Image (tube, rainbow, N blue to C red; front, side):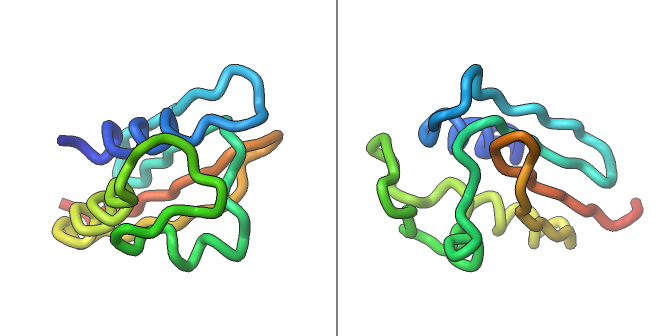
Length: 100
């Protein structure tokens, strides 16, 4: 499974108040994935990559493993990932891969 697929599944499970939620993944050495869902509250960002952690009011029947798996894949490739806000709504995941 690819990082983009895991991020998409997480996006699909957490659709929120914004209209037309979608994931836009741009695969480059400096990739980013943008979604237009409800975003990730600042207080939750320290925990979103923890295994079995789900945010307050999380929808769907997931186990809270998707972003933990993303983090393990990212680390295995010597890369990094960070999350921030996406305007007008949603989250932005910035992926940074080491040069080949």
